[in-house]
Length: 287
Image 1 (cartoon, helix red, strand yellow):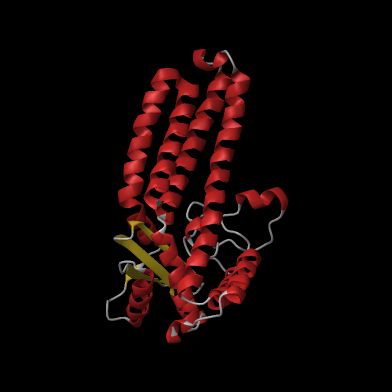
Image 2 (spheres, helix red, strand yellow; image 1 turned 90 degrees about the horizontal axis):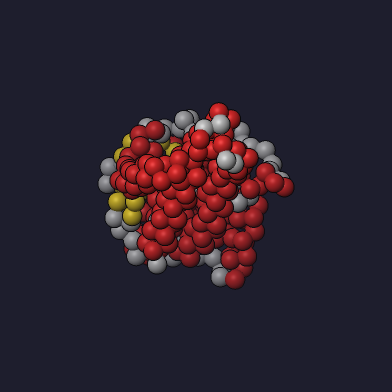
C-alpha cells in the first residue's frame, strides 16, 4: 500500500509538471517537461539519499557500535531490515532517515543528539525514523522537494514569457502570471502538508514499539536545542527530513503554518501523551 501511495504521488507530481510545461510551451513544452520529470524521478529514486548524507558529512558507524544493537532490536520488533547508521558531527541534536526503500535505508544522528538524550529517548527517536523508512516517507519527501523547485523554475519562465509577450503567452498573459504565482505556492503547500501528516504517523509508529512518553520528552529537548542553534549545512529544501525542523526557532501562526515542514512540537507531544494514556508506557530497555 505504501509503495502504491509513493508511486501515485510521483505520477501526480509528474502530471502537474507536464501540465505546467504545456501551459507555458504548448505540445513542445509538455514533451520537454515530461522528459525532465522522468529524469528527476530517476535521479530522486537512486541518488537523493547519497547526496543528503554527503551534504551533512555523515560518517557510517561500524556494526559493532552500541547503536547498532539498539537499532537491531527495534528493527526486529518492527519487522524491518537493519538500516545503515550514520553519525553527523554537530553539537545541535537532530536526526533524519533517508533511502528509497527499507532495503536501502539509512538513519543519521548528530553527536549532539547522543549527548542530549538518554538511551530510552534515543531509541524512541530511532524508532520514529524507522517509521519514515517503513512508510517510504523520505523518498516521497525528496521527490516532492525536487518537483517543487522545478515547478518554481517553470513558473518563472511563464512569468517572463508573459511579460515579454511571446506568441504562446500573448493570448492570456494574466493567466500565465497567475500560474507563475499560484503553482509554486501550491506545490510547496502540498509538500509541507504531506511532510506534516507523515510526522504524526512516524510518531505513532515509534510509540507502538517504544514509549510515547520517551519520544515526547525527546521532542521537547530537541526543539529547545534547535531554537538555540542550527544544524550545519541545513537548508529549507532538506528541513522536512529532520525529526525536528532545524529552523524551529520562533512561533508560526495563521497562514504561516501552511509553510511549516513539521507540526508544532506542542501538537505532537499532546498526541503522544494521549497515546501514552491509552496504552500504558513500555520502555525500550524492559520491553
